[in-house]
Image (cartoon, rainbow, N blue to C red; front, side, top):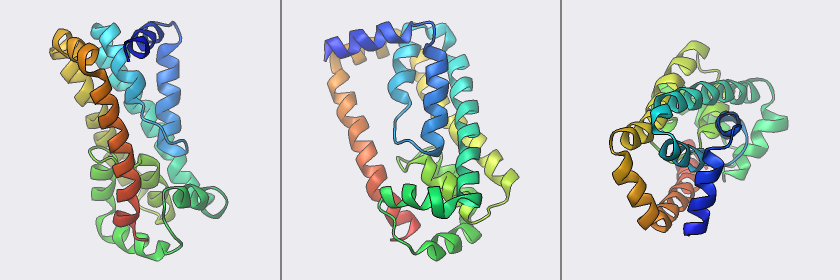
Length: 195
């Protein structure tokens, strides 16, 4: 595990690391299953002074990717959105998704986009599919994604040396926790959005 940690710390200092982080956050929000925190955390550990900049980069690029996801749901659901939703285990009863969004859309974006392991792209595509008010979607996404990325940035910024030691000594544990969150997200998405 120390080789992976050393490699990720080297990559975190690469001159294109910030662009790669932005691209990862964009892609994660609209169509690719990934966890951008895998890149974010080593980057903050490598350059703590840039923590808030990284949080802003993640938030902005994630919301832009979320807008693309919204457009996929709104304009290209059958061709692009539906296969993505099926990948996450959701069947064809999208009427149930629409019913939930008509009542709780902004709350689903706020909670699902920030503090749950449910893949954000499921939230974005569902928002477009159900034609959730666009400005409501964008504002809820800014808050949700801002919190999502500010939290690890803040923890590492304020507790950096301790956090770095924890990653060095307990990195494998954090890897397993991240994997568990991904699995929970895959399992929770169909439950929340109907199966």
